Structures are given as structure tokens and as C-alpha cells.
Image (cartoon, rainbow, N blue to C red):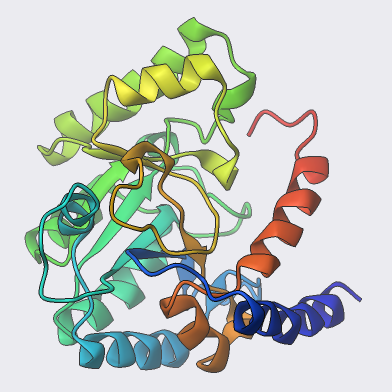
Length: 270
């Protein structure tokens, strides 16, 4: 039933875009897994991801997240409607499967990493999943096709934590990325894309250059980089709906998902 409703919502979302055109700007694509074989909606087939990256590369619109943030602040880019690629969480298939595809197409992506799962060698999605290692990430960074930002330490939902725990989640993540990878975590993504509390928003602004949520729409020039909207790419998108998301469309789908998730994560901490 859920999959049928999801599929039915996509053409309705496209129709809504035809009635009210989505704004132009920086589109930030949100991926989770590639070739993880979990069968989940956010676990894309390798060949589908390859086709999507080929199309994005051919468009000439792909930029790094750093360049995308500069665009929001007024820097002129060759691409009028740039697109940045991001991943959440930190599963090994991102390095094993997605990274070679990014390299082949000359693209860059940012991985928002939940550091506890790497540092303690914990599987992220299910108990039998393989885990990502610091050494694997170190090698990945040397390719130049991947950068690492923060997704908190334990994937904690910051909107429901006191100030001291918020600071600990952020600082442990920043510290581990700096210590283990030798890079600064310049960018942040809120777990589950849930809007932050005032305390969390202030803590994030004092530590990072940007912060990402959901939204499934483009970010026009002048958008607050600490309220960065992203477009989640799903297995059921294929190429047809992926193209819509490239152009900042399918926002209605996100609004429905947000309503569902608010109820789904009530009482959760991670």
C-alpha cells in the first residue's frame, strides 16, 4: 500500500509543478545508499545511479557544495541553475559503489557523516550490514570526488536535546572528522531532516558554513545557507522523476513526506 501511494503521489506532484512552477536556484540532491542491496526506497541500483550521474554531468550544472553555497551568497557560476550532490549517514557502499561512478563522470559529492558508526564500527541500517572504516574514508578523500561534513555523532535528533548534549553531538563529530581524516567539517545536515530547535540552530550556525534540511525544491540566490533545502532521490524516481527533481520540482511529495515523518518520529531520539 505504501509503495502504491508513493507512486501515485509522483505524477500528482509533477502536476502541481505544472500549475505553480518551482523557483530556480541551487538544487541539492540527497542520496543515502547505492548498491547496498537492502531493497529500501533510498537504496538505489548502481546502474540507475550511474545513469543519473551521467545525465547530470552532461548537463554542465554540477558543482561542489562549497561552490553551491558561494552561489547562494551571490557568486556568479557558469551554470545558471547549479546542482550539488550530497549523501547522508555513511555506509560503505557510498565509497565502494557511488564514488567510482562520481570519479568516472568527473563529479564531486559531500557525505554528511554520523561519526559514531564509523568510530565504533557499527552498522548503520541493520545488524548484518558492513561498516564504513576511517581508512576507507581517508582513501576516498584522496580521490577529490568526495568531501565529508557532519551529520552529528550518533545521528541524534537535535530538536529534542538540551544544549549540552547538542554541543557534544556536534563537537564529537567535528573532532573525529578532524582527527581521523585531517579535514574540517564545514557543512552540516540535520538527521532525518527535522527542523532544529532554536538552541540547535544557534549551535550549528556557530560551527559550520551551512546546514541542510529537506524541502525538495531549489534554493534561490539569497537563501539562508543554514536552511538549505535538499531533494531526496528515491529508488522509485528512476530517470523520469529524477529529472523533475534536478529542476527543483516534486515539492508536493516532500510536503506529504514531512507530515508523515513528523508523526513517525514523535518520541524518537535518533
